[in-house]
Length: 180
Image (cartoon, rainbow, N blue to C red; front, side, top):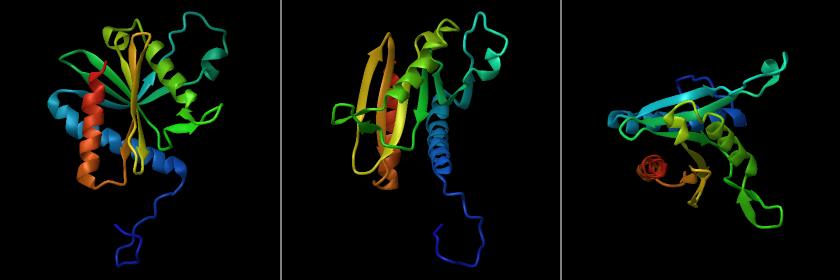
């Protein structure tokens, strides 16, 4: 499809940032389904997580923030679970003291997803996190193990040819998903 006038009328997609973010998330989810489900992985999108609240005031359930992951991968052979969060933004932000750094809010988000589900089952006890961001002419792969959970940050260079993008995304999902 192009934006040139033609004989076929199509509805113009909403060009707001939210639409592009959702499109990127759905592209990664679709790719994961095509690549990993034939290998036996379970691939789920938009998984709602519950806070493990033992007691709460009456109004709290109505105002407690919801947790919804973008993608959750489960490999049945090893029992590994990978929580993927896609962001259609730069992976780095200006650092407080100069330079660039990872966005702390993203790390807190993944930490809450993973740690809040511990104790529910073995999948969550060993879960790892993976952030996937788009990039142009750059590649970033960083990871750490925080309190027993691997959390990785990766970019997909969208300036590359489609075959190269597929190879890169395959490497991110399969290789980075192994670090858990």
